[in-house]
Amino acid sequence: MSGLSASKSALVLSPCLRSFAPGMKHYEDAYADTSKRDNGTSLHAGMDAYYRDGASKGELGLPLGSWQPREPKVANWVHDAIAWSEEHLEPRCESVHSEVYVAYNFSTGEVHHDPAVRERGYPDLPGYVPGTSDLVCILHTGQLLVADWKTGGGTGAEKQLLTLACGLREVYRTPEGELRKVVLAVLYAGEAGVRPHEWEVSDEELSEHKFHMQVQLMDVGVRTEAVPGPHCHSLYCGHLAHCPGVGAIVEDAAESPQGLLPAKQLVRKYDMSAELSSPAHAGFVMSRVTSAKRMLKYHETRVQRYLAAGGKVIADNLEYSKGNDGHRWRPKK
Ligand code: SF4
Image 1: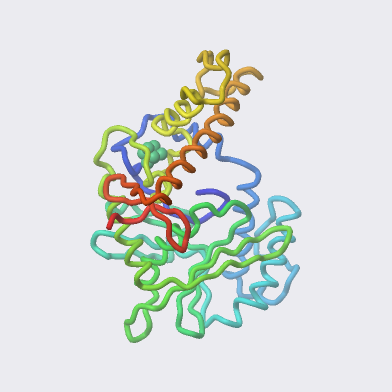
Image 2 (image 1 turned 180 degrees about the horizontal axis):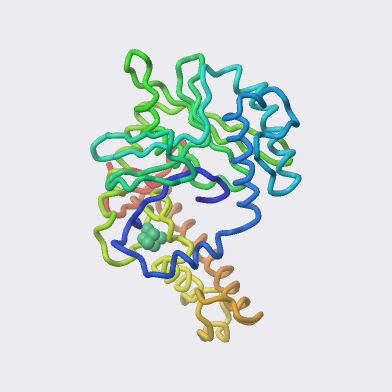
């Protein structure tokens, strides 16, 4: 899982390593298990139960099969989300599909779809990027809506939805075999009800994303060392939380000559990745996190100023540039 969403893709291999050190996955799992994310997962399960259980449609407040909210407030979130769906979404739809698995091969354009694949039990298909879309709707306009429930965050949601849309577009062709136009949506749900953010994407944007993914996937399973880069996020690396390559960048930023840590903090008394053992150890880690955040923001601003002054920002086959959608990595022109 990624962020606070129950959907998303997961590569079998890390995007830049052939294998990862044994035990690191355990480390990630131990720290990823937050209550916020669990509530997000509970909302996803509630909405999935609603869409799959036709009998509960229109009967707000009734139990949704065997679904139980993780906390009472999640029942309210689901109640509000169902009301929103009935009023604003379903009247626009010819069909609604919940928790849809798809795997797409960005090199060959082949797609794998199997309704029996549930809860991220993805088949091992080399070369394919698997993922699960929270909601896929065929709209009365003929468009394909690919949507994602979010109970927090939202970073990277656009790229993830684009990736899912590439495969889902093949699965949900029109009866004439045509590719449908795509609409993406992030559905923020929680205390304030549902706040949808919906936008259309052009064929050009989808083609650009496919190319971007092809470039990023070229290194998957090839390198033997962690090489941080745009692929960490755009390929949803499952090791980001504990990657030594990224950790080195954080430490470097925190301790750089222009760094913000006082000299006495620079003595490495503790291991950043080890289980937190004392208030001083936790203070050591948090000092570096705070310092690194500020330093990395400073470097980001420097790069953006360099761009604004007419410079180019290139890394391998990608170019970081400013467009209507803000500053992003894009395929190099
Ligand atoms: S986080 Fe980035 S650098 Fe580390 S293994 Fe994943 S893709 Fe590679």
